[in-house]
Length: 210
Image (tube, rainbow, N blue to C red; front, side, top):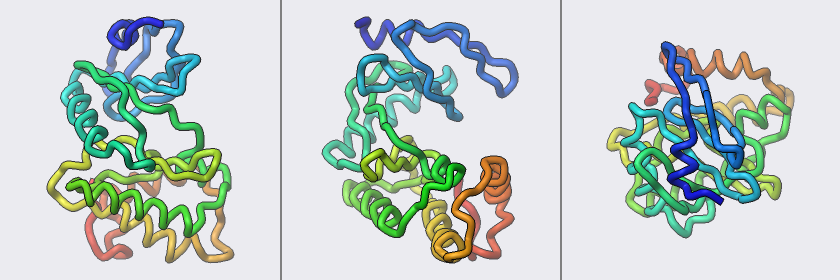
């Protein structure tokens, strides 16, 4: 297998406005997804992914690597295997994000919520400030374990209310017997957009912290 540096260098993309277009990758890489700051690829025949950060976000690679090292040994977070100027290598997580669970109708239980609370408490005990916790960075694995990813903002100083607001929505609405457990992706995305604009502050009693 090629080195991580070689794999990272093989990823070529172009930007047009807010859209990133992937132009080339090494054949040993399999596209997994794209976020605000990076592409993610599974390294074929392994249980690892390489996260390649866009040029304007390369500083996040070092920050996220340092935070993963700080979280080392906590089973709720991926292990860090390598880092470079514009990439990190971590565990590949097999499972569904909470976002996907909602779109597919997989029930999210109070046990899952408690496990997420425990994960965040353990991170806090390491001197971190868990932030930017949302539906797309929390996984329920095939064996029902909770794994959190995208920890780059865990050292920010300001308090983030997102997880508290998600728990409030879970308790107040989702947990009700007649509340639908399957929600279309377009509706979840619309809710997220409105949340960022503080449209739900009258329900949460506080402003969104994104």
